Image 1: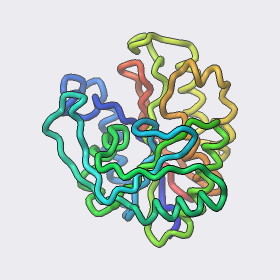
Image 2: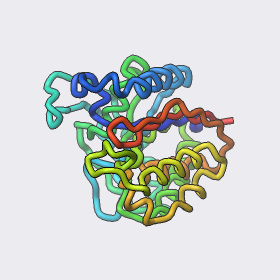
Image 3: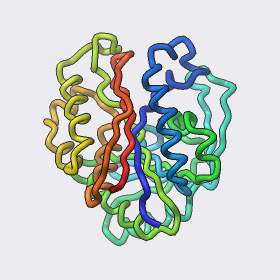
Length: 265
């Protein structure tokens, strides 16, 4: 079964009430959008959710696939000692992707890590009742150029097309970390410029081309960890007609938080 849908969601730990209880009023718009996203993902009946994420274990010059049989969450680094969750992994899809990648000369590293990195776990935690039967495949970005990430997304799309399972792709992506004066590093003009460019790009059929057009200096100074996951997503959907629904955008902490659903036309 080919790809049946995609989405973009942020991964700030402050979105999770156990960690950011005092900040829930400030992220109310994002919280409502994530609730709407949960309903839309539920309607797609995903059997596998592929999470494209920017942090976590990495390997120089290679894309990392976590093919653990079971994934759990540990948010102790953020002071949360009570949250628990467990998901089935998707090692079979991960190994098929590895085989295709090797055939095409793509650098891939398999990881067998039972604890999901927080940037993969946070978006999943906001959708608990809707993904209890879906398996999860976290895929990390690489220390490679933007075009390589788009090509990698195209290769993933080929494998999804041949999958017998219903696949949904979730890009765990925060935008600029300098979107307003509230940011820890302060406001930078490149921050708002980057977020504006991404929000315009995501709604276009030429999503991948628009992302690649963003000035590299703007990308660098915006410090947007979600840029590479978005490039992979753009590569995945570049050959399909899409309808994008932006559910929210805000930057209460100076970090761009966007939620969007991408329907395949």
